Amino acid sequence: MTGQILITISLVAILFCNYMLFRNMKVSRLKKELLDRVHDKAKEDVENNRDWEWRFKALDQQGATYSEMMVRFWKLVKINSFYKNTNFLS
Image: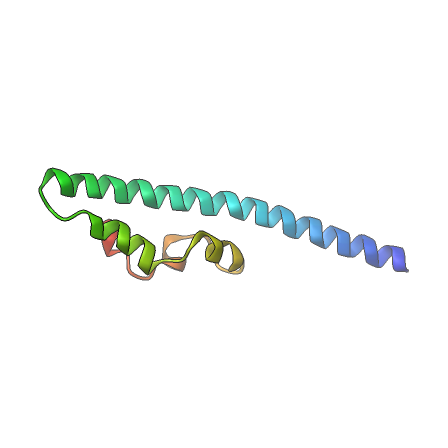
């Protein structure tokens, strides 16, 4: 009986660790995609002699950190889940 409980707990822990591993990959991709998009928009701003720093500040202030995105494992890894205001992308 005790062995079955330990095996079940071990399997649940392994499944959770695998889920978090894949979630880490998804969060990493999302953050990279966001940074790439903000970088491209900021580059356009520089070419058009507009203020560009606000985009990076908005990205930092309006959204969740990498750690917050990892810890909130019940939320989907999508822009809308963690960034309510995405005006820095337009």
